Amino acid sequence: MELKKDRYLKLCMILLITILFLSLSTINTSALSLRLNDKGDRVQEIQSLLNKVGYDINIDGIFGFRTKEVVKDFQINHSLKVDGIVGDITYQKLKAMAEDIRYTVKKGDTLYDIAQKYDTTIQGIKESNNLRGDIIHPGDLLYLPNTGRGGGEENRIYANIIHEVQPGDALYNIARKYGVDIDTIKGANNLKTDRIIVGQNLVIPFEQRINNGKFNLQKGAFIWPITGRITSYFGWRSDPISRSSDLHQGLDIASPVGKQVQAASSGKVVKSGWMSGFGKTLVIDHGDGVETLYAHNSSLLVRVGEKVHTGQIISRAGSTGKSTGSHLHFAVLVNDKPVDPMQYLP
Image 1: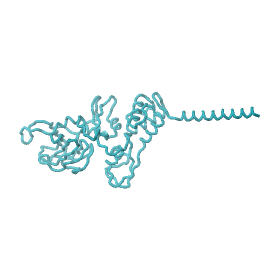
Image 2: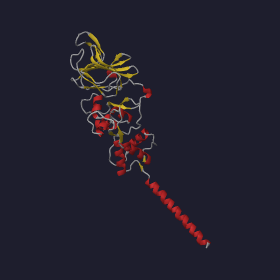
Image 3: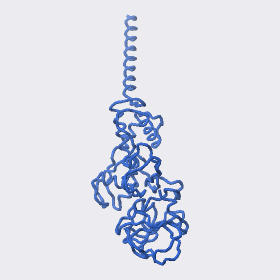
Image 4: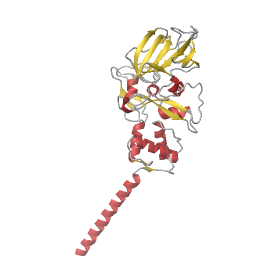
């Protein structure tokens, strides 16, 4: 009788251990682990999600070195374990970032405020919601595209990223990578065509935190306020009207009347009105004693005290004031002293 009991207990133990082993095996095999040289539909899914959140990556179902580097970049940006392997945690975070956000418009909301808060772009919101203009109303439901840049933190200001063109780069891919449209990049860099060359530095207007909130005055600190041919550079010249020798304190950029002028960087409008000689003029304060001036406009679209962001349309070109033809006079001032804008443009 005792012998039968011992056998029964042993069989129960063996059965329990077997069930436990099979359960652990099932858990281990179901855990996601995609890495270098893996292939298949799951790899393609990961690449598609990475592409959706703004990374430049081919969707070919092959986990190559490029995919590994992009995965590592994503892990770095979101404080995950950086190993280039897509496990369950990385996958769930990536999937969440790729999902569009539903947002109900509140009183006082603007597209700029919403884009800034949720770390996306105005153009992206408009495209996702088939909006033709910038007007939204309280109660409207918006789908906000997630760029994968993370956070949704407030109190962000615009800074320009310098992107060095790499072999295989195209404006389309670069625009997708940074969440801006092609025309924004072309306008920011005064590009007449889509042609770019390896080694070329492009300024990308982009939201990111600036250390200590200070304005970093360096090459590429500003985007081009308008595209066009430069008819007069900064420096001494013969004044076209008085014919006397005069220090030209900015750049003259030829443009037809009514062409849109965009803010060269984020800041606060401190002057919007008529200035002697300059006609209809805007001045934007960027902080740390740095200002930009936009003169000879046909119309002004922002008021004193208004905060503007990089690339925002602020005026329309014209020939008001002391002018020989339609153009934009663009100047950069540091502590009220004019400096050569070419030092700080792309």
